Image 1: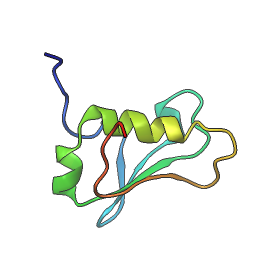
Image 2 (image 1 turned 180 degrees about the vertical axis):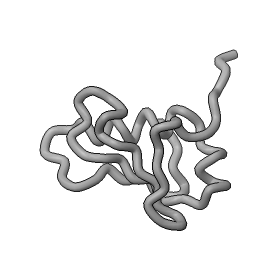
Image 3 (image 1 turned 120 degrees about the horizontal axis):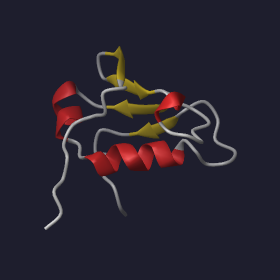
Length: 77
């Protein structure tokens, strides 16, 4: 069984009460910052796949401003 890491990466910064940002320096190829909309409690409960997925979106051609992850963020589909 694969171990799941919970909680955000150390590079994440709080923008406001419920907005968090992962900078473009987090991953090579990111075109925009990734923003996560969540309370601190929800953010801490998100697993590493959520942060991987939203930062992958931030690498997509044509993206502008931010890649967003909503409070119900999860990875996969």
